[in-house]
Structures are given as C-alpha cells and as structure tokens.
Amino acid sequence: MKTILMSYYDIDDFLKRSIINLQNKEWNNCYWGDTPFIKNCVCCFEGDKLVSYLSIVKKSIIYKKEEYVVAGLSEVITDIDYRCKGIGANTIKVAFDYIKKDNCDFSTFTCSKGLSNFYTKAGWKTADNLSIIGGTFSKPMNSNEMNLQTMIALFSDKAKTHSKDFENGELFLDIGEGKIW
Ligand SMILES: CC(C)(COP(=O)(O)OP(=O)(O)OC[C@H]1O[C@@H](n2cnc3c(N)ncnc32)[C@H](O)[C@@H]1OP(=O)(O)O)[C@@H](O)C(=O)NCCC(=O)NCCS
Image (tube, rainbow, N blue to C red; front, side, top):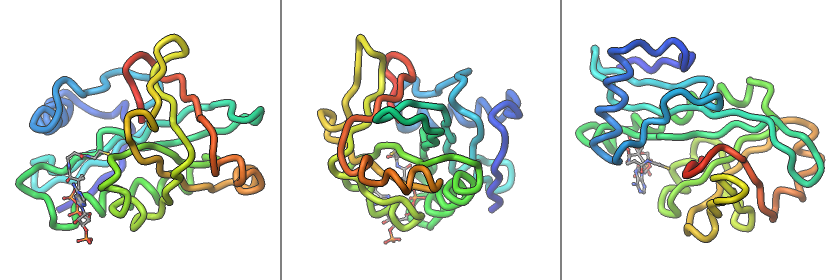
C-alpha cells in the first residue's frame, strides 16, 4: 500500500476515472469536479488500484467578524472490499498532518454522528453546538438540521485566542448550491 498526498490539479484522466468509480460504489454523482475549494487530495493505492481517497478543501471565510483560512475534508472513502483494515484511518491522518502545517487557522467539516470517533483518533474534536452552513445564502444547508456531527481542530494562535467563538454558532462556508463539507 502507498498513500500519497497530491495536488488536486495533478490528477490525470486515469486517476480521475478511478476516483469516480470508487465514489460511485457509495454515492450517486458525488465527484466535485473542478472547484476552487479543493486544493489537494490523499490517495491510497494497492498497486495501481485506488483503495482510499479524500479531498482537502480550503477557503477564506468571515466568522464572528474575524477572517480565517479554513480547511476541511470531503469525499472520504475506502473501497468496500478494503474497509476495517486501518486504511481510512491512515488516509485521514495524512490529511490532518498536512492541514496542520498548511497555514490554516483551523479545520472543520461534518460527518455522520457514528463516525466521530474515527475522526477524533486522527486529531479532530467534536463541536456539538457549532453548525456548518453549506450551500448558498439563498439555499443554505444547515448541518444541525441534517443531523450531522461537526468536527474541528484549531491550529493558529488567532483561532485558539478565539476558541470560545467555536464552541457554538453557525459557520457559513458559501461553497455553492448543494455542497457541504
Ligand atoms: C468511513 C470509512 C472511510 C472508513 O474507512 P476504513 O478504511 O474502513 O476505516 P478504518 O479501517 O481505518 O477504521 C478506523 C476506525 O473507524 C471505525 N469505523 C470505520 N468505519 C466506520 C463506520 N462507518 N462507522 C463507525 N465506525 C467506523 C473502525 O471501526 C475503526 O475503529 P477502531 O480503530 O476502533 O477499530 C469507510 O467506512 C467508508 O468509505 N464509508 C463510506 C463512505 C463514508 O461514509 N465516508 C465518510 C464521509 S464523512
């Protein structure tokens, strides 16, 4: 097995097809395609076969009157035939270690409630009273209303100084219709 962190812009056609095939086993038409928010991805291969994948999303936001650079995870998946072998845990750990060093103020994203332990082992914490708002201003998607769990990790001095702000609130990402991290 080899796990590689790579630029999203370096994905060639073969890898793109592998990502779409992997995602289609779990979700319908999930592939984000060209989006300014996906900067990097983590791929785990057995030989030439893609067995685990995630994308790292990143953008600037204003939250409680402060500007932050925030990074999250999207499209986290392990091939169904390769699950429960620690591959996904390794994929998200590579992403966490990268985000921590990538000059982000903090990292946040949502997951189903049953998966929070999976992400806390890699370094994120649960933020039960912080809602992530995906979608757009006119068509918002509220993680709380979707019964999703918010995960968070604060990295910069600025984010840590304002840590109380992240204990509760609504963090609007403005990432496009139908999209949420
Ligand atoms: C979630 C997912 C990526 C985990 O991948 P994986 O390679 O099987 O994960 P690992 O083998 O590294 O599991 C690590 C730990 O997480 C736990 N875990 C894995 N999947 C889980 C799930 N669906 N629910 C609850 N716990 C889970 C494992 O039991 C394991 O715990 P342990 O360390 O106590 O044994 C995989 O199940 C998947 O692709 N699911 C479908 C897509 C999905 O739900 N993605 C997440 C979107 S937020």
